[in-house]
Amino acid sequence: MSHRPGRPAARHAASPALPAAPSVGGPAPSVGGPGAPEPVGYAQLWSADPAAWAGAGAAWRGLAGPVRRRADALDARVATLRPAWSGAAGDAARARVTALRGELTEVLPALIEVDQVLAEFAARLGAAKARLAAAVARADQGRLLVDRSGRVRADPAVPRPADRVGPTVAQVAAAVREALALAGAADREAAGRLAELSAAARAGWVRVPPAWRPSGGAGPAEVGRWWAGLTPAERRWLVIHEPALVGRLDGVPVSARDQANRLLLAGRQAALLARERALLARVPRGPLELAALARVAAARRGLDGLAERLARSAPPRAYLLGLDPAGDGRAIVALGNPDRAGAVLTYVPGMTADLADAPGELGRAARVLDRCAALAPTEQTAAVLWLDYDAPDFLPEAARGGQARDAGPALHRFSEGLRASHEGPPARHTVLGHSYGSVVVGTAARDHGLAADALVFVGSPGVGVAHAAELRMPAGQVWASTAPDDVIRLARPPDELARRAVLGATPLGAAAALLHSGDHELWFGHDPSDPGFGGRRFPSGRYGHTGYWEPGNPALDGMARIVLGR
Image 1 (cartoon, one colour):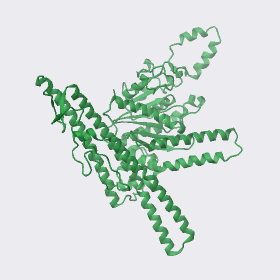
Image 2 (cartoon, helix red, strand yellow):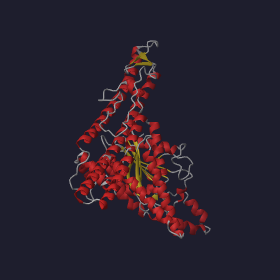
Image 3 (tube, helix red, strand yellow):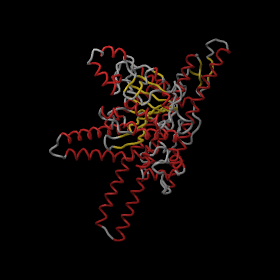
């Protein structure tokens, strides 16, 4: 029995069933139903719901909150027992309650890991469905029929020579097979990862690892080798007991860093809230205290905004790779898993960016990712907000460039870490800097090198070099865009501004302006969007200094195409 491809003859939707209580040993994910994974059928894939799997993962992650609260309640019980009950019986009671608390905390990384597994399964399932939809559209255009098992044939009601329709049938059939194979591979992998968690639930979640830890100067490759040499139980022990170490180590897989930093998140929020309350308690409050209170309150709201995004089940899943609320605050957040994506964007924001701005800056990265999905729905991409440096707050700071130089080693290590922890063939990695962030990216590339396939500069005041060749990048992989109305075009070197101010007060001022109307030297070197820089340009509309991510701006399309390698 055959049917038009847009209307599958059979729909066998498989909605994941979440147990009421944690049971990692429950059914493995299978698009076709519970139990051991079987080959995925055409109708099964067509009717599968990736969002349901992502929602199930988020529900498992949501159990971490109640588990943590129960563990805290046991801590309070131990504190109550300590002064009230002494002797052997009291010691035994405290030991038992402490052991129960340990059993609860040991499951926390696993709950987050289940979410990661199901979210990544949902993402790959979505990519497979997109491929299948593309094949279906091709079949519709060619007026072909697809049966309920996914076999493709010509419609006998449409007379045409076999030699003309045969190649199209073969191409559509191959596309259908590729989509089903992708879904099947995702199904098998997710089932295997959950089976490992199920086995760990029986054998023990954690085991104390060897005492050796990577030194502070260890490179991401060395860190990656150390991590690979640990057992899953030893890794979970580190996530639970040394989350601050695991969460900041470049070279540790994204999934483990996310687990560790999520376990730290509530404490980071509480610390910021405590700082805010302490400042509120100061009476009277002068201008300095009021300014400090405003900064801390803004940082707290920014962190709450990030926490809200991290809690969201809607794809792409967010991964917390770094967080430090000290000072102006720092954060590294990925949308999609960079370790499993074929194309990865690292976005470095510019002047004044801090923890308060992190949700908005993450939104810019999300817009590029959304555009990538529109251009290439079958490809897996990820975008990272890298706000792990002290961005200047005022122009005098920005003019000196010291903060860009200070950020260089960290950005270099992060890019090397993404290479070290990536699974499968290397991803295409693009590093994008906006405004002062382009100075950070250019300085890091010049002084340390970046493990990247392309560099992108938007709204740049210069990138610390006179020519693209100084950035240590493959030929043709340095890109730039500056809007016609971007005020950054006025960011001339200080000595040039002084010279023009002096000449402007003389009869030579008008002539000097004409002579230098084509000058492309900016605050930090040659304008990267000038052809003489040696890079490649892509257009931007008149959206000012911050409008490169606006939906109608061709610059957004340009950034997405560079990320995809198009």
